Image 1 (cartoon, rainbow over the protein chains, first blue to last red):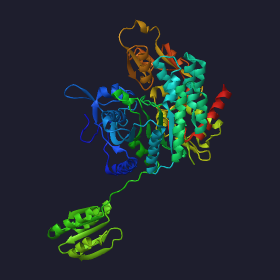
Image 2 (cartoon, rainbow over the protein chains, first blue to last red):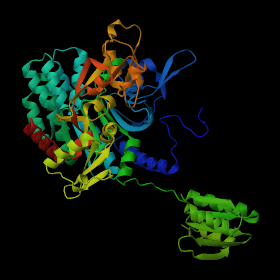
Image 3 (tube, chains in turn orange, yellow):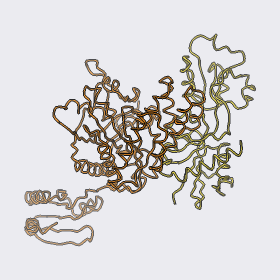
Length: 425
Length: 212
């Protein structure tokens, strides 16, 4: 048995303050951006019914769920995803909004990566969900917000890949093979596995005209206008055609936002969550090999909860983002250092406490301590990066600037006056 | 300069993999000197080779520590990592096979089949697709030994010529999959370093064609 007093379970971790401060400042920026587009923050339960997730379309894999059993014998799970519960929330509150519902979240999700037993299992996600608008403008707005959040982190080089899930779905309508084989084909295309793709097409009974298109899909990425032109020329049915038109439309709106440098198109982009019905996208930064955000349109998901509401959104893996920022040396931690350490003694305690509260109300960070000897307090101030130390002994006070080591001697009364006259800052 | 990092699985694949890169102009004089170094750079060409254990190539590529990897399909199948598998290099050809002591008749065996292998996921997946329950015994080497000392009934391993099997009194009873060396690419690098990576892949394609 491991010593449980210093171990945390596999996939969980303590976030000590340096890390947490970085995370907080990133999340604060995100929230500011989300709010500036009139998205409102919500939260959903940490645990939900197992059946809710398993029966919802899209399907997160069963083995990836953290399961719990409650006292009634119901099987619960720690939420593995936020889009699904938020979609339910939108349906449940349908009466309360007429047109649009714009929501955002910053929450933890829990998933067991079955392939990576040593991997993380608790993730912080931040994202938005935009309900009630099926126009390409909503897709573009959500992608635009995603881009803004990345810019707010100071990332200069990043890329958003956009695809259209209906394009592939339309193509699959032309293929008459068993569902399991379709799944396999999807995986092959998604991993741009040209080797297996050729073999697959050789051994499966698919019409030649369809084969010709399938083989081109993994290559449909990169130069945007060219990809769109090529894609248009290979459409086999109206679903594929309208998918491309829709993608082009969204792309043109994004051009008006002025973000063309960040956008590229990949029609081989297929999301594993098959609740997506339209434009889908993934975002990553250069020199960091992991996907940090993904999203897309999921018009049908709400239907399974009883009411059709078109929707689009994205989620960002905040932990992955921070790891990436660290790798690129972009992680800025706002250190909330103490402005003043006020050291009091018995005689002046009440007055110093009052002074400290006054300063705190002026948004300064103030620590207080009982006098133990000036050397002790100076050491503490040096180690923790405190700006100034004020040592008050009886009626006399000395203000020491830790940076310059300048010392100013005065009386406690004079110090009080300085504070209340706003001469200290 | 933006480097392209290439993970090579130590051993023969690394040598052959490097040869291909050399042919398309990404040589690295350091690599050719026999040394114990694990990282080799050519700063002019912006390429860096890293030598890792073959089984680790997929994770280096998945996590983006390497942009490109050269690795056997056997390892790719066992690791099941999230990456792009772009090219079949055509060398390092062998087969995933089930082997057993001469005269062993699996269909006559009752109960759960005991399978010793270095590739538990591949073995499990294969037998599951055939509806046969197995008991996987994961070994790290000398798999041929297992049936001889009664540790397992059969083995699942990659077989090139079959001579090791023969010498140990084993024979192939079933071929599972063909295997060869592949080029894998990190999904993000494929996009963010596209120009360079595409050029490399096109170059390698040409080389393969010439050799075939």
